[in-house]
Image (cartoon, rainbow, N blue to C red; front, top):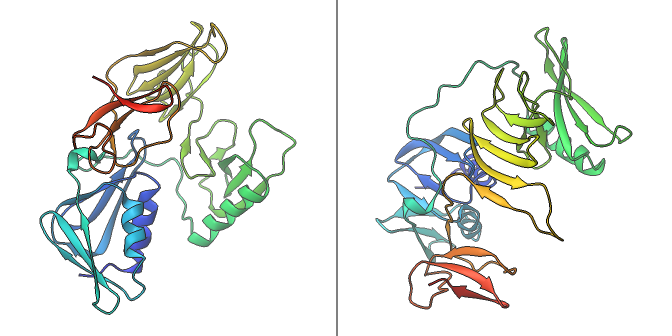
Length: 302
């Protein structure tokens, strides 16, 4: 089989959401971010013949791009052959275990009704990204005066900063301004808007904020902690009261999961990471290990 340019473009975008991807048999591709706050789904032209996992999607696409002559793909149970260069090259790219990838839910999600809808063309998206870069705008806001919907580049911390406003559609009568609504940063990730009706002492920002509560986000409470919430449950808290230079207390409510890494990361004193035993054979025995960066090198935690 072959992959169209449209499908390759989709996969490139998916690589910015999640490092890995689990391909499922059929015509549907899905991915979810590691924090599970961004979900993407698309129907493609091709029919994927089997389920398989790719640990590093961007690396996979780089390998595919080695061939300039529209390569073909031959699937096996443990690998795919990427054939190109007029049939003279066959690259064997091995699959990974699905458990090594953060995967989206199997069942379809029921999305709430949208407060506002618009179409954003690739040309307009490129314009906004370039404008944000040139104007040094760290945030992007969706605004509407009730008649027109616009994307505005801005700096929420600097009222005197340069801005750009691009009309992208017709409004529905509702007015949205950049001080309260959900925001998009220049890397394309959703930033939170303040949750209306919440009981937060010192303000906070929430994904999918509901009246009288909050779903996922981070909040600064009067207890001196910056807290991170997921599904209305406090998952992590940082004690804002510093007890010394570059020190703070973290409190975790739940478990910590480290994805095995195929490449040894640049270490800093006190870092923890999980090696996959293959690409990064930190323990020297081909097995996965918890690694700690101590005294200038990675050491296996016994």
